[in-house]
Length: 138
Image (cartoon, rainbow, N blue to C red; front, side, top):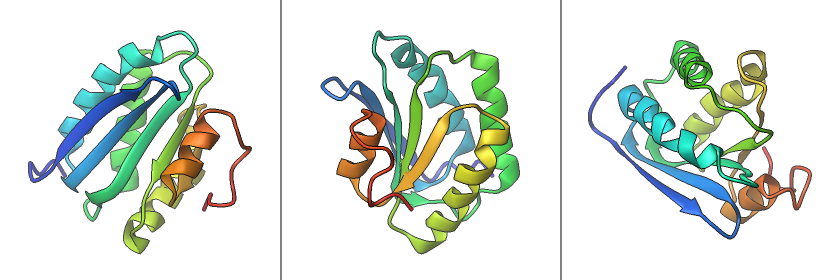
């Protein structure tokens, strides 16, 4: 479940007040958990709006519901606070299936509002509160 074949790039989009987390290559649970630690400092910024997880270049073939449960447990341990959203961005049909599971089951483990998108612009608009879900929400 923790192959080292991928990497993660994280950046703060100041004008939108969101953190963009781009996952490239094979999913690596250890890297995702480490990036959550880094992301905690962004989530504490004033007027923080949310996280955009960009899975468009990621291979999620090893991800299961247990993977998500580990991530949600770690999020709870880190102590994320505030009223912000989480968006996921994908273009792969296979990734879309697993991310729909993340979207629907996630509310049972984490109170964050979450949506799945295929458009970066729509995801950013939703995270920024400019739209309710957008025409592009899946």
